[in-house]
Length: 107
Length: 123
Image (cartoon, rainbow over all chains, first blue to last red; front, side, top):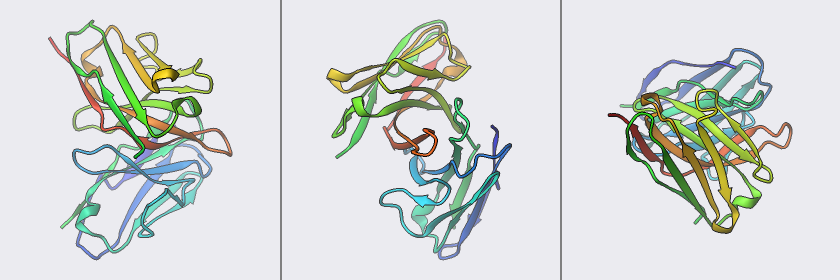
C-alpha cells in the first residue's frame, strides 16, 4: 500500500492551525498512525487508530479519517511543533508502509 | 524510565557485515514485538524487520530479505540485527522500536523508539 502525504512542506505562523493530509492507495480502514519527528530526534507516536491520541499527547493534535483519506489537525501551533510528520498504515502487512512526510515549519 | 538504546553502528565497506544491538529498560522484550526501522540521510522512514510472538516469527522488507537477520535474547532483554552483504543503499540511521499489536487486526504500531545508530556503507 502506497501512502502519499501532502503538502510536502507547510509554513504556518505561531498560534495558527495546520492541516496535514495522508492518502492510501487502497483502503486501510482506520489502521493508521501518525508520528512526529523533530530535527535530530527519533520519531514519536502521536495518533493511532486514525484518531486516538497516544499517551501524553496534547489535545491540540487531532486525527481523523478512514478508508483512504486521513487528516492530522494541529491547533494553536507553537515553535516546538516544528517537525516532520509521517503517516503509517498497519492494515495490510507486511510490509508496513510510511508516507514520505510533511515538514511543518512554524515561523 | 522506559527506553531503548541502540549500539553497533559504524562505517563498513560494501559487502561487509555489522551487528546492531538494542537494549531495553523498564519493560520486557519477551512480552513485546520488536522492529527495526531505518532512515537514510535526509529521507523518510523505512520498515526493515519485525520479530513477534515467541521470537521465531520474523518478517523482512524485500530490500533486506536474505541479508539481514533479526533476533532476540530474552535473558539480556536485547534485540539484534545481523546485517550481511551490506550495500551503499543500506546507509541509514537504524531505530530499534517497541511494537504494539493492534487489538483489532494485530497490525504493528510503533510506540517507543530508540535514539538510533548510524550505519554507513562506503569504501
